[in-house]
Image (tube, rainbow, N blue to C red; front, top):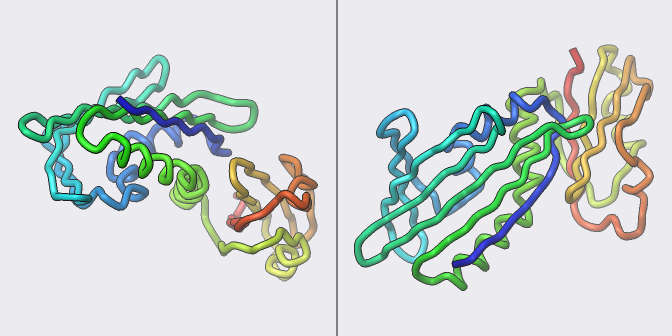
Length: 211
């Protein structure tokens, strides 16, 4: 059996995040091998995965409303017998919602599955955070940059008179900057960390309306 885990924060209310992960089609967006999903009943799904071969799996969803844990159990009997679990632990953090995703797998090609799962987990947090924000926030503009530039952000919003929120996403950090009529008001998070020499890799941003 193999196991991989990833944890990250999303600066949105817990209910919003729970509702997002309760929809298996949202999770499939980030796993390229998932090709089709059909609902059998309220908590049972048939999922087609195309990787080394094309196989249909049965997926059962379990939700605990007291702990907000969401578990997807994936199984297949026969020659290619597989048992896997995708476990989401979701709870309130200081100014956001914390998500811990764990994946366990028992079946053929375990070393290959672990390698692919680890690759998937590396970029998971950035992509999920952006997708959840897009689903709940009115996004005006988004993009990425090699190095963070507050001047570039200011240039984008200087002529806008409404209240805006800018989400800066870099690795496991999320920084929220509030603007009003083109002026910076407050910052949530360590903005100085984005100017650190170790802040390598793409820095994503979403400019949203703060209604």
